[in-house]
Amino acid sequence: MTSKLLVSLLAVTSACLCQNPPFACNLKAFTPQERTHHRALSDRLMPAVLTAREEKDGFAFEVDPQRISFPEVAQWVDLERKCCPFFAFQLDLHQDAHIGLTLSGREGVKQFIRMEFIRLRDKLQHPEASASQ
Image (cartoon, rainbow, N blue to C red; front, top):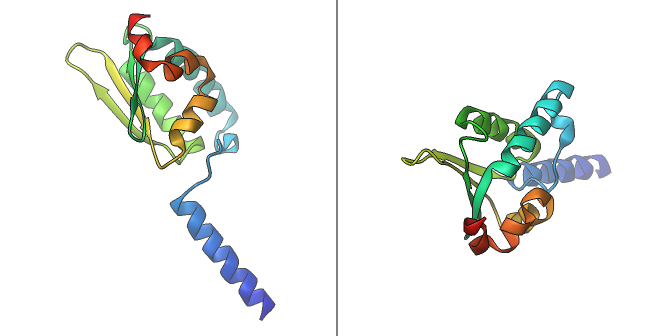
């Protein structure tokens, strides 16, 4: 009886984790090559963010295509979703050629972004000021 209860609890826990993955990056999701590539893309993406706009359930970023290309941002999204499955991503190419990247998710995702995206901290804390930088 105890083992059946344990199996049932594990099944419920697994189902809950799939529906609401924890706010934690799983760096074990990457191969060593992917980790290196993700780091290189992040090093290009973060300084390319021109503005950050707070949304209801996340942040919308305007990215300078002169500093990182649309396909590179798409590669970053593909890798980021492997380690952070709790994010929802939207990627847009605007008429003025700027790249739009939106990171969103359930309650708490904005706070997670503010804590983890350290290189964007100034823009995330004061999004209205980022347009003048």
